[in-house]
Length: 212
Image (tube, rainbow, N blue to C red; front, side, top):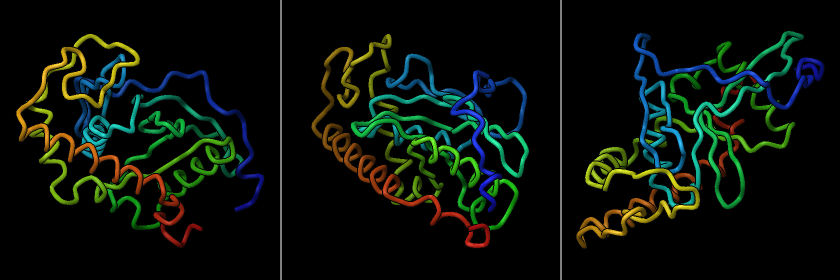
């Protein structure tokens, strides 16, 4: 791809990310009551909702921001905008995540071309960027186990920065039964291991070879 087609306009745009939770509209949309953000996390697909479960339980994730910012750049001499699905903070810093169904990445399409272009822009600006696939999220019935655990976890209280969200009940300090505690600790390790594998993947390897 010609270098000129990847010319940078700006690191980010002052535009506010689009509001995605609406009364009407297609697809699965809603909010997730995360302890890792002052505002509820927003999702606009089932895949994003599943990713939020993993990020909420993963002890390595300190904060979550959905639809965090708009990036503007040039592609094929035309202005483009890109909004990552999620931004997380861990001990290694910030990482932007794009959450996709495997089928959406399997074939050459304009959507994949635009994703690759946006990915290059973020990398050129020094941002970490990862692709999370549906298959990453559903392996070993992880989603069912996370949903069961979070359904019995005490509800989040008022947001407080610096809260140790890895605890079962960080606001009140209550403890679960021995069985639930064991499952909680196991789930945290599994989510951290999954996220670590995702962050070690080269996003280029997940895109169709025809567009490389």
